[in-house]
Length: 188
Image 1: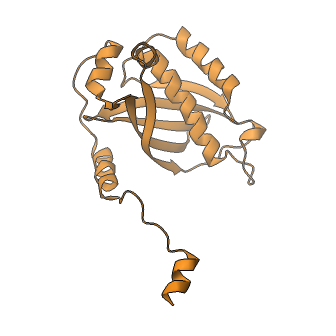
Image 2 (image 1 turned 60 degrees about the vertical axis):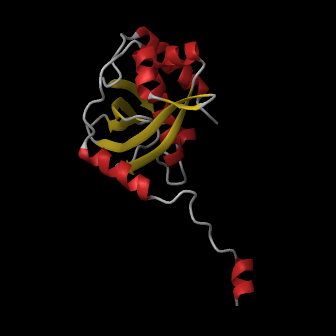
Image 3 (image 1 turned 90 degrees about the vertical axis):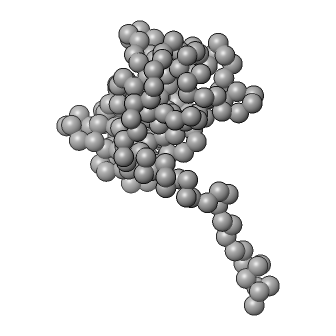
């Protein structure tokens, strides 16, 4: 179940904080609750992605994105992600999530997020490719920035993000279908 109570809390906090630019860092604070755990009693990887949602939404409030989405009747979607898990987060452990947009191209905004333990270790890191949409498809980031009252070119795309974009372009879509047991029997 989506953590709606946590979402409301984070949105209220974000609304009370000063505005930020799209590439500025938004920091949100969280705790691992028992219902966030997997069978190994650590933060479930799916729940980690949900908690990253909370950080992005808080960032969106502070940067003016949520207002632009509402005003323009736009939607927001994730078009891809790559995540690294490096340290366990256990029940009742506190951590902070750091969220920022790194760069953008003609279609997507690339968002970097990380979860940091109180001892200063990074627990996980994720790169998202996000898009704003309307009834006609993807809305260009330049148009979104204009609606947010922010202007300017994208910062230079870091090499590691450029390599990920290139790798994603090589990835087949739609994915190859697995051969079914029926197809194998028919071929035999």
